[in-house]
Image 1: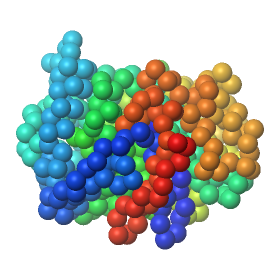
Image 2 (image 1 turned 45 degrees about the vertical axis):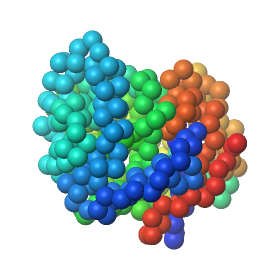
Image 3 (image 1 turned 45 degrees about the horizontal axis):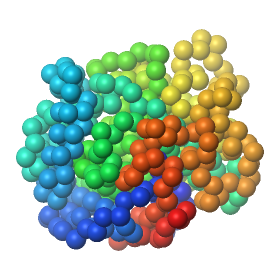
Image 4 (image 1 turned 30 degrees about the vertical axis):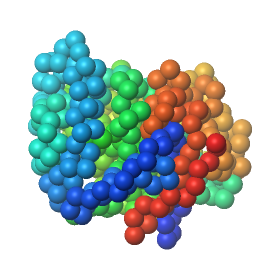
Length: 370
């Protein structure tokens, strides 16, 4: 689970919920670096796709090999590894050339088989099962008007979060700089923040049109993070990109601030724009599948659902929401048995570690909730 808190100005402030406390010696590979900042492992990669992949593999190769073994070979692929790899390589054909280039460089540098590394990126779409939750509140909904976003990642992590959690700082030759909470070896996006203040995270959604013929869910998150300078630009990226599986995508932030839950599947896209300064989503579609959907009168999720619980919390604290409110850990929101932190699970029981994304790099800004 991650809570992202964004201010647009000289610096972007991001808080990451984690119990990670590994002491890491600073190491370098070309323009890339690996260091411990504020008790958390931070990987910075910079340059062309091949350069970023090589830096990632050289700095975290041993851990990447372990993640591939634990998550893909012994985890997701335990009962049908051949089928998992076949599905992943079918989706691989729809990845941008730059992403494939980065993955090949990472696989070579880390010493892992390319198809298994690809499966590590795409297993969540090939074998669906995530149960994530997210929200954004801003403007009249928050105490100062700033954007406050939260996201839980509820998924069986096969033990990887404990040893492989990493905050990745991307400085690509093409596109915006961005951060993503990840595991060693995963280059797409789960919860991201870019230098323009755009937050993006995914919530798998079920019951619509799914396919391996399109861009995977998490690489859609990365595409928004790397190329969207506004919420509207992020929505347009989703609309114009061939899509794979059903997803509720949170896109929020920017200046002026805005937010949307972009519901999409293989065939359609409907953007649920924020009303009254907030949006929330879990794994249920609210627009797709409703033939009478009216954007001016959007339906609200059941009050018993995780999204409904979040909306109730926002409404109960309307106008007073600030950085101290941990909605993403409130009763009824995370699925604690599979609530994955970037370090120790369940995430809802761990403190936040703060970071600033600045032009000079990543800076730690304290620990909250210990």
